[in-house]
Length: 389
Image 1 (cartoon, rainbow, N blue to C red):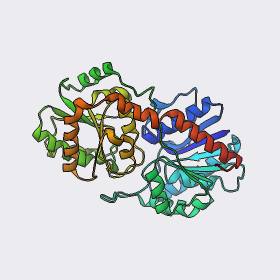
Image 2: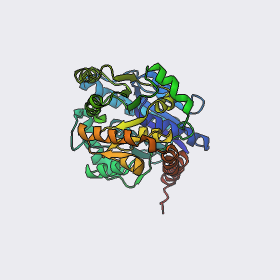
Image 3: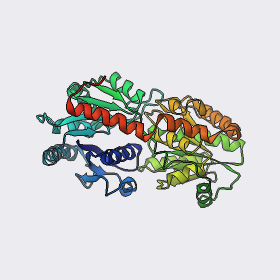
Image 4: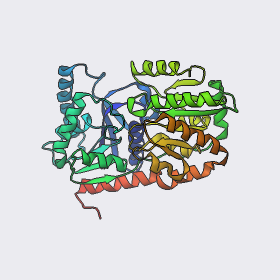
């Protein structure tokens, strides 16, 4: 098959990492695979890109500013994508990152019966019920347009059950819908006791101190303020516990979070680590990984941490609770006191944690082979027009 993965942007997020992982493995299975994106968020996306494996094309050098610029870029992007599909004789367009790229892909494939369109949603796909966050009106408009045209899309792939439920609740009605969970590269993310010390030394963290980390981009949906408030509660009780936020994000939100941490008295107990390339080593430096999100689909961070043998405390939103199963602690969202209690209980249980059981759960349910095989099978069915059993 000749497959093009189409994204809105390239960065170091979970969506991009999953697409590169999937594209690479499909390429090794003999398919012609390439990636196209509208623009980049930063150059760190190249951390996950193997130039010898997958070709990547960028349509624009920067994001549009203003309504006229955005409208002009949407039209130009549609024409660029349509020309690319014809030039490379693409059979399948696998579009992800709701909703800009999905709508552009729908426009570009109109009147091209030999090119099948697949939509993918790899996030929660909804606002949080406990703490709704603002969505840009342009995204909201395109989301409505996607809902209206979804009945003409042959296939929609969700990476979590909650994502699919939210898509249906918003009125999405693709011709076929399947759930294929994200994959965790257990060869990359695996227990390694020697990787712990260098990162903790870099962060000046005493070996006997416990370190709790939030790994994720600085975005409102990720719940950083709740994590900071819970951290402040624990810091008032315990002296040998530190905290770290791994990930980056735009201003002014980054500064807002840093000011909040100062107001909470966390300056000496909190590390802002920024984006990191050495994520396996980062997980090994942590004793607990925390996901305080308001809304989630499939959280890659949780799976990666567990594959490294690190226990997790997560909020009960989306599929993270299903990922951790009975190996972690699940608490209500938007509640710093309950999050602090969950983290405190996990600290007390650390001596009982069996890292191999955490890893075994990820290996069993979320392997790369399982994800790639399921995706390849449904892509072949869609390309041939065959019906699945």
